[in-house]
Length: 207
Image 1 (tube, helix red, strand yellow):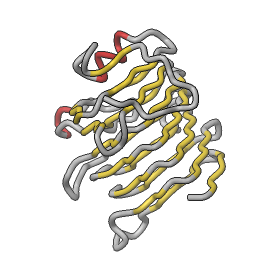
Image 2 (tube, one colour):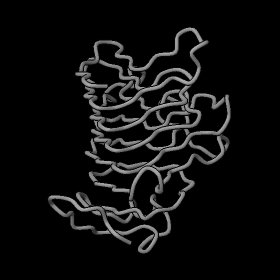
Image 3 (cartoon, rainbow, N blue to C red):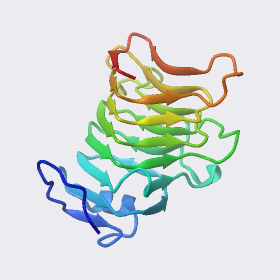
Image 4 (cartoon, rainbow, N blue to C red):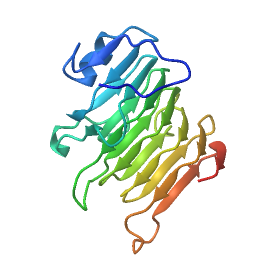
């Protein structure tokens, strides 16, 4: 396997599926600040990240996190199913993955990635596709202290049924640059690419 060249090669602490079979097992075993490298495959799992980590896929074409069936997904703090969640004040970098929702026209309230608990997500060189209700959901007003922060770059977000990126709450922040956001249902009234709600703030450039 040839790792892509980087200016500053990252020291990898855990490799999936060599050290652990699933990404969640690797997260559970990792220490704060660890780097997890994920080799090409399709990983059918729901992932919760509650500690500061860097998780690097091989690329979005070959390293896929796929939603399990809806009935198997646990809900988040606002009662919605999700594929990946970042919470607990964690600062998480995710790079080089595809995150696939349900291959259907009805994916209920499924969230691709949710960011709560004053956590911070840096998402780079990713693809979020197949049916999700909202591809990225940052912050909430329903539960106190659950703001979120996200920086999204070089990412394709598509196939969502309601909102590509939804950010909510006066303490939540979003930076988006050099992404492609494509709604899949232009005939649906109200479909939104990027939405700031309830005094969330941020910058949107070159998308």
